[in-house]
Length: 124
Image (tube, rainbow, N blue to C red; front, side, top):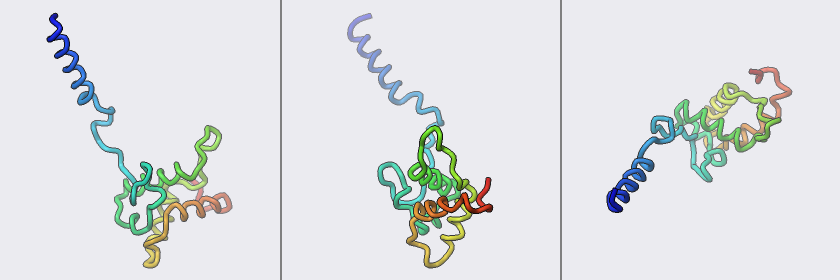
């Protein structure tokens, strides 16, 4: 093999690696939550106005994003007292009000989660 064909072979391998296999999810972008993105997260700025515009997938992605930002992420404390379905219903009900457009979802979540252990309607 000549030096020239070896270099071309390496270039071809590099191109295949860069364009090739992908990340294993079929090339689909992960669903991002609703609202403005800051530091790869929508948790800080997501509002009821954004929630109303989002799809169901985006809304659940928002809930997961908020939970990752607010809940402790240690091996001992990965459970939340506020399940996704309960959070979804809370956001739907709160954001339906006319005055709620500017409410931040993370603030709603934090307050609801604080009282979740005292309520019996937030159980899984």
